[in-house]
Length: 493
Image (cartoon, rainbow, N blue to C red; front, side, top):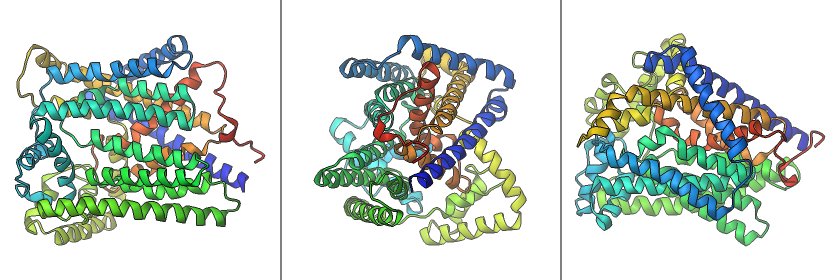
């Protein structure tokens, strides 16, 4: 059985290698030259410089793990300082979805819960994040600065969770490097001036995963139950903010099949069903409570969810699977009726695929390049419109192309190290890394059909930073990282 599990693990890691290599090639030779109009060889040289600098930094400046207290101080500075400076000088004007979040949060903080945009009738999940944001607006004041300070706060906490998860999956040094890679991530730094749901969402998403890993490792059954329950609780909060968090439920089940100490596949499957059933009950309990409160306040039923419209947009060949006015007209066509819009959108999407499957296959490559070859959303969204321009923000807008180049080169480096992390992981069987792969896979499959934006890869890439850190550490060290024996399996099984 161990041999079968090991072979399945290696096969999944090999698939990940192929997907990351494809993303890396598209980023270097297709997407980045298209974004900045620079030749691919210049992008390659600049990316190599970033890669080389990171390797040297880890090899000579971070050649061992640092004391926890000192590391937390350094991490706090590394995360908060550049982001605080960015939001100090870049006053991003909310627009589109971001403006909807801000305006509704302002109204809700004043007790005006029914002043929502009519698109909420079709997309109920859009009410979750601003409802939560309104709580902070009510306490600290309804200003953009409040929201941006929250972005800083949750960015730091997310970095801490990356460190903790990396430590649990691999070892302390890998966790520390993962957190530092996050702190230096240009797009994430710039994205902090945008009133987006990703900042708070990813914190609860990572928290859910962290408690799941702790639960798997704990020997005491009472502690296991508590950690599984906490994982489900944080999963319900993240699902309330963005309706993609639920992907962790099947991921948890599949991971248990490999991580369980139960003998035989049958017992492992039964064990997985018991654990996931317990977590699902806890999840539904808390998510139900949150949705009930939201319904009482707003009249919006957040239990309703459908991807019909996103499927319609994602199959539009002319728009390359991104938002477009043609598909958006279906909302008014059917008077923002939830059931009718999504049902009709799904029918049209299926018709598009079946009537021209070859065009859809061509579309897949373009969407893959947008989703996995592009990390320009930070510069794109944050510098889209500035409310109160100043000398520094004007210079940043003027050099926006350079910031996109920086973002892309850093992102290419992350993909490069994640690719090598996957290759190194082929030699060492570490089932605790499976959730990282599965989150990435689900994103790849789902967004092959759904609407794409480069920022939609955020939850997958933030977890791939752990794999990138592993690859970076392995490349930087002469000796291989020695994982604790309990995490490793020999080929012989």
